[in-house]
Structures are given as C-alpha cells and as structure tokens.
Length: 378
Image 1: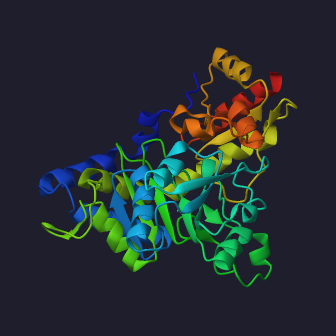
Image 2: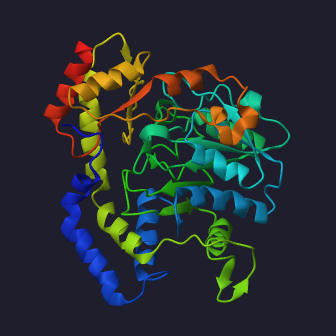
C-alpha cells in the first residue's frame, strides 16, 4: 500500500533529534514562553527572511491575529474588505470574518490554481484594505502584478503561507530587469508581503507534533501587537493593553520545529523530485496536471480529473491512497450560507475535480512511477 501520507514515517528520520529536543524542554522545567520558543522564532525569521517571527497556537490564529493587530493599529475597521481567493481552505476566510471584515472572493486561474491576478483590480472598492494571497499546494501565489496593485491602491498584502514553507518567489520579469520586484526575486514566501501567517500542523512541510503557528513580518509595531494579543492582550505581566486571547506556541512544539527546520530544504527537494516524475510520466487525457512552477515545494501535488471519484477509487483498489483538497468550496459551505447562491465556476470545477497524489519525502521514485503508470492505465 502506498499511503497518501504516513506521519510516523515522515518524522522517523528525525527521531533522535526530536527526542533530544523534547528531553531538553523537560529538563528545563519551562514549558511556555521560554528559550525554545525564542530560539525557534529567531531561526525561523532568519530562514524566511523577515525581522520578526511571533509564535502562536496555530495557523488560523496567526492570520486572525494579523487582522486584529491591523484593526488595533487603525489600519482596518469593521466592514472593511479583504480580497481572498475563492478556492482557498476555509481558514483563510475565517480569519477575515472573525475580525468582522468582509471577504471578497476572487476566482483562481485554472492553470496555476492560484488567485487570478488579472481579476483583482476589478474587485477593489473604496472599502478594500488588503489582499490576502494563499500559497495553495505549496505554489507561490505572488506575482508582480499583485505587488504593483497593492502599492498602487495602498493595500496591505497578507500571505497565507500555511502550505508553502521554504517556497521561493522567482519571477522572469523581475529577473529580466523589473525595478519593482527585482528585490523580491529569490525571496521566500512569508517575506513577500506586509505580514504572513504560517501553520505548523503535523501534515505541513514543516510540521509540529501538534498544533502550532507563527506570524512573520518586518513591521515591528505589528509584531509587538500580535505578540500581546496572543498573550491575553498583555505585553507586561498582569497589564492588558488589548482584549486578547490565549494563542501561544508551547516550548515542546518550538523545540521540535527547530530540530526539523534544518532538514526542510532537503525534504522540499525530495518533494520536487517526486513531482517531476508525475510531470514527466503522467500521460492521460482525462488527467490534468497543474502548470509546472519553478519553485513549488509541493505540499500537495494536485491533478484535475472530471471523473475524480472514479479515479480515486481505482487508485485505492490498486493500493494507492489519495486525498481531496478540498471537496466543498468555501462559498458552498453551510457556515457561509449567505454565499451559497453565488457562482464561481472555476473554483467549483477545481473542488469538483481535484485529487491529491502522494508527494512527500517518504514516497520513493519507484512508487511515484508506479502511481503514474496506474494513472496512465486509467
């Protein structure tokens, strides 16, 4: 059986480092807001390329705290609009609505599965305050057009980097001399906008052994407010400048993440090698691979098939596990029932046809070739 994802096997190569990290925390007797968290925040900020990293409880909290901090700073207020991709995981949108801001859904490109940057400008209104790009599937959603629009209209650019740890923005136009984004080329996602939310859910490319998240930014004020908001609104013990919440990365998760961080690039390279096999070998007119990207880190390798459910069962019958990311788009969820009559045809097609193939550091090249051969015989 080729499992879609075997977390025990994924973490097995780092067993010694993880156990050593856990032992250090246990021996320290300090389990929250300690040296392990400070070390990981320093190392992850350095890795991403930002001045600040603030650990928090999970990826949803990271995004939620960013918007809440901007409201505390007076940058946003109730009823303001945030442009988001219509095909994102629901957490991206929950962070917006939880802050009493209004999400404006924009269709993705069917070629890249990322927000269609040609449709963003027409969605901007006098109430628009931010664009949230979501680096879905480990693919970079940032484009020079998006950067220019945010600068032109004075919008905050927020990244949902839950699925793209280690992904690098590479743009042909910037590499060929564009003034605006030349400085951003070869920068990691999570450092391209004004602030970014990261999830370290166990399935992520950099996964904890539980829930954890972080905010990265170069904005010192934003980082300080995010940190206070995640600590009940307090930056000084028993003094509360904000009505905050409890969202802190614990010492065990921080130590584990720091132990795994040095292996992230090698793990991502392994994912790229598996993805290359799919790109080179899958040859079935019923199955569409997304447009190849220069530096996706392939958190997920999605294909589109208008007989998705039959393909999934066929692969399962032949011993291959798959997943669907995601079966129901946000605007069709009962939680957002006021959107249920909206029509987003490209988003709906993606959610109807998407199937995720096994693509992680544990998958062997032989297994990936076998999956491709099965798909070709479907």
